[in-house]
Image (cartoon, rainbow, N blue to C red; front, side):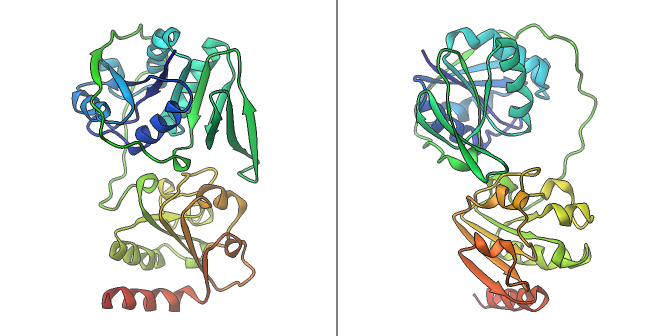
Amino acid sequence: MASLVIAEHNGLALDEGTAKTVAAAAQISQPVHILVAGQACGAVAEQAAKLGGVEKVLVADDARYAHFLAEPVAELVLSLAAGYDALLAAATANGKGVMPRVAAKLDVPQISEILSVESPDIFRRPIYAGNAIQTVEAKGFKKVITVRVAAFTAVAKDGNAAIEPVAAAADPGISQFVSENLSRSERPELQGAKIIVSGGRGLQSKDNFVLIERIADKLGAAVGASRAAVDAGFVPNDRQVGQTGKIVAPELYIAVGISGAIQHLAGMKDSKVIVAINKDESAPIFGVADYGLVADLFEALPELEKALDQK
C-alpha cells in the first residue's frame, strides 16, 4: 500500500533524520507519506513536502502533540496505521519512545535500528553492540521500523508533496508534560554534524576539554565524548557518542584520548574518515581508524591548533 514516516522535528525545523528515514521507506513500500505531529507546525510540514519521493504530508496540528509525548503520538500513528504497509521513524529518543508502543498495540514485532533494506521484507540491523549484523525477514504483518539514520543518505529536497490535515486521535491521558531543560550550543548538533571532535578519559579533567573545544571551533565541528569522559564529569551526557549515547556517522571523526571501548566504537565506526590520537599504540581505536597518531594529546593538540591557525 504505502509507507508512513513519522517526522522528527523541534516545532520549527525538520530534522535531517527524517530525510534519511524517507530514503529507507522508499525502498520498502511506495508511495511514501510523512506524518508531522505538533503544534503550530506548518513550517515543518512545508519543509517535509519538499523531500524527494514524498507523495503526501499529513499534519496533525494540536496542542496534545506540542511536546511529542510518546503516548498521544502513538495513538495518532495507530489511528492512521490501517492504510500503510510500513510505519517508520528515526531511531532517536522520540522514535524509540513511540514505535514500541505502536508495535505492541498492533501485536507485531518491531524491527529496530535497521542499517539497510535488502528487499521490502528483508532488513539488516546491528546486534551485540554492532559486532554482528543480523538479517531479519519480516513477512505477513505490518512493519514497524526504527531507522539508524547514520546508515542512510538523505533524499534530495526537490519534492512538491500535497499537505493535508488529519484529525487528532484520542489522548490516552496517561502522561503529561511538566518541563524541559535543554542544552544550548552554537556548535552543530552531534547527529547532524559533518565533523566531530571527541575527547576521552585521556584528557584527565574537565578543564582540559577546552583543548577539544578549540579544535572543534576552528573546524566548525561538533564536540563529542566517550562514556568514560561523561562518567568522569568532564562534559554533559548529551555529548556522549556510543552504544548508550548517540550514533553518528560524520564525514570526519577525530577521537582524542579515547581508547576505543566496544561501546564507543558501536556509535562512530560508520564515520567516513576516522582519525585517532592516543599515546597507547595498542589502543583498540587504532583498529578502526583510517589515520592514527601515537602521541601525547597535550602536545599534539596545540600543534594541530597552530597548523589550523596557519590555514
